[in-house]
Length: 115
Length: 110
Image (cartoon, rainbow over all chains, first blue to last red; front, side):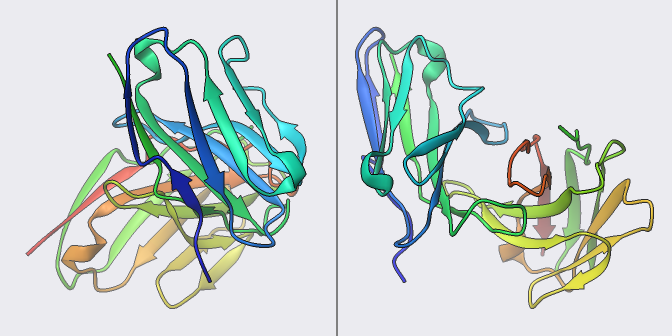
């Protein structure tokens, strides 16, 4: 079974530029998560989708971050414009369904550096 | 949202049993306790999940006392490859309202 795919793996941009990350979850997984992980900290949930609907985006900085999951499969996360403090690893995860007893499978992440 | 507290770091030697305790004093009735492992430059990986008493799988055991205000992840006979950060999460039965804390950085020494 293929894992969660993310691209690109690395991205370097200057502040005020835009950037987009792509995630392809495990086939058949209904729930998709985007996390931001700053060096030395645990992952911070940005947004959770159930199929193509948003379940929780309470920690997504909506003035600059946006995410979509068209057709309930792939997802993109965009930052526009980027700030220095956005430098982090952006992780995508998926799970079969929503619920507590449901492990999340994480992708390798995209390391973003904002100069 | 149940807050969790765990030690920032721990050291152990190869072949020893390691126990990492997590406190979650305000856990709710319908919350589950979940542990993840993260190696450098990788995403976290699910280890184990439980609701009460004891859960065991091929990797670890999870001990949860009756009051559920804490839990202990037990790793039997650790090896160098178990060096990682271990996160304790409390997740509600909708799979929401969880947070990854800073985790416990386990270093296994030869």
